[in-house]
Amino acid sequence: MRFLADMGVSLRVVQWLRSGGHDATHLRDEGLQRMPNGDIFEKAAAEHRIIITFDLDFGEIVALAGGRSVSVILFRLHNARTPHVIDRPKAVLEESQKSLENGAIVVVEEARHRVRRFPFAI
Image 1 (cartoon, rainbow, N blue to C red):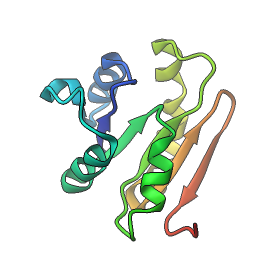
Image 2 (cartoon, rainbow, N blue to C red):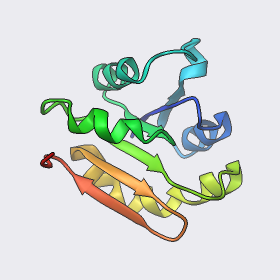
Image 3 (cartoon, rainbow, N blue to C red):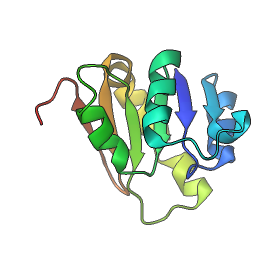
Image 4 (cartoon, rainbow, N blue to C red):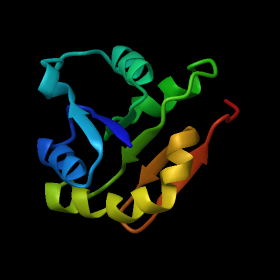
């Protein structure tokens, strides 16, 4: 899978994804630290990437995207330390791969994850 990590996501998460054979990049890799969320969405759409973020704004951006689907993995974790953030998506990626490939928002919480598939009503 192809991923684009937002600024709130550690570079080590991207490295972990790469070590698992995924095509992952971080905004920092390209010097795009100040890129607005709408532009991040456009970049992910153009590059067919799944956004990885802690930023709740992406749920709304995706909902208002007018049918253009960019999948999002949204972390809602109390423990945002990198080892924990890496540990949580291990099961999520395996169980939600099809949904992410077809358009979904996956909300990753401490003990569970929820998948909301596209299209969805506003």
